[in-house]
Amino acid sequence: MRVLVCVKRVPFTGGKMVLAPDSMALETRHLGFTISPHEECGVEAAVRLVEVNTGESVVLTLGPPEAIEQLRDAMALGIDRAIHLQTESAEWDPEATAAAIVDAIGADEAASGPFDLIFFGNESADSGGYQVGLLVARALGRPAVTGLKGVKVEGGSVRCEQEADGGRDVYVVPMPAVLTVKEGLNLPRYPSVPGRMRAGRKPVATSAPTQAPARLEMVRLVVPPGQGRRAEVLGSGASAAPAVVEMMRKIGVA
Amino acid sequence: MLLVLVEQTGGVASDPSLQTLTLARSFGEPIHALVIGSAVDLSHHGVAVTHVAVHDELDSFAPDAWAAILGQLADRLGAGAVFAAGTDRGNDVMARVAARMRLPLATNCIAVAPGPPVTLTRQRWGGSLLEEARLHSARALITVAPHSVPIEPARAETRVERFTPQLKEQELVVHVAEHVSTKGGGVSLAEAKVVVSGGRGVGSKEGFAIIEDLAGLLGAAVGCSRVVTSAGWRPHTDQVGQTGTKIAPELYIACGISGATQHMAGCKAAKRILAINSDAEAPIMLNADYAVVGDLKEIVPAISAELRKRK
Ligand SMILES: Cc1cc2nc3c(=O)[nH]c(=O)nc-3n(C[C@H](O)[C@H](O)[C@H](O)COP(=O)(O)OP(=O)(O)OC[C@H]3O[C@@H](n4cnc5c(N)ncnc54)[C@H](O)[C@@H]3O)c2cc1C
Image (cartoon, rainbow over all chains, first blue to last red; front, top):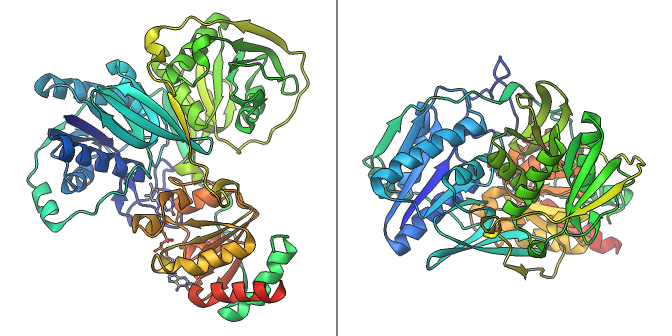
């Protein structure tokens, strides 16, 4: 079985969003980077599927040279190799991102055969476009199911579960297929020290795709109002309990 | 004219869809709506024509079929823009429309103005950051962030037109085959009036006993931060945040939670937030209404004891 998972490098913002001077990106000088929790579950699903069914798992990212860090993280968890579509630092819009990913998948499949499953996060952590996986699926002519919290391979099909209306909607689609997943799909493992060592030696295929013109063009970022009110301190320690209960009574919840 | 996909349950339009109709009216008129399955009364929401798609195969949700119907109708009507709510289904169907029609899509918008180019403001990071953008397209595809626009009713003479769409077999491959109910007992996190949440500061799985006790006294749901779910102390269904559940209680009690933007993205619709934290400088203090500074292991049981005393 061949499984691909697509991830995006994003800053690990803390308690506050701080913009770079040009307002076109976040100020990331003091931040670490990560991938979305949704995508972490996609990585875990890919690793588990290949552990059970044998075959090959591949991680792909479109991003700046530094995104090698996120590819190595995925390989430390058990992904076999990586595809890095290198960009300059500025973000690509969803259409341009999907087009480059489709080309890269085409090239990899021509050399190594089709991917049975291609995982994406349901939406990226930062831009939240909700569409790259579906654009890729359409271009490849494969069925796609989104927002999954359950994925189970059953013969030539995959059973997909999506949270809906106080329960789960179940889809069964033939493979090859494209699946977008959400956090909660599984509980991702932590990397081991030997895993980290092995990741450094796993192959990374790097290329620099050309960017299609952006039809969704970012003009600037804005921090929404509301960040920065100050809490009324009701007290400190256990002695604050009466004041807390008073407040609860006043607002009608106790 | 503009075309709006309206989601419904049992003939009642969803709130996010009504919010979408309100935002669409600020963009242009007349408004045509598409509903799939049964008719919905949209005469209080400024809709000129409601198109009702009826088809034997549409009893269960099939996103490619919905996208085909929406795309065909947009072509037939010559719609200048197509809107849907930024719900799971709305974003899914609109992305499929974008893929089929090779048009750019802007998701989770909170403001839009006609162009060309269309200008808009959309949410990033689950609403913790906003992006102003231009959409370069003869037909704009837009989804509207749920609960970002208040519903404004508007009377209209609504014509209802039923039609049977032509669907290809491959558009029905992806469909809901089965619905499994997982409704358990207890208060649902998304709908609870009060939510008591614990973060890393709770310290362990067992540490949640005091959180559960307080929640029980208040008829509240228990929530948690991502640190807690990653550690396996609570199931992911309890996680509040950008990649967890979005909640809107009257009171949110955050115990031992620092207030990372991704956590706050899930609780910013709470009417009031009480932070219980040993660090008076924790970021949550800038997003909370009330705070108690100190050790949650003393404060939470003291609040429970006080509630019991007054019962
Ligand atoms: C893309 C992305 C998506 C994410 N999605 C989510 C999400 O959906 N939900 C979510 O929660 N997080 C999410 N996160 C993670 C988020 O960034 C934070 O890491 C997380 O919310 C921190 O959890 P915490 O507040 O419990 O832990 P910490 O940040 O470690 O904070 C612990 C707090 O507890 C206080 N404390 C410690 N001991 C005590 C005590 N005895 N009494 C009182 N206070 C005490 C400390 O002062 C501190 O403020 C996401 C991150 C990314 C990058």
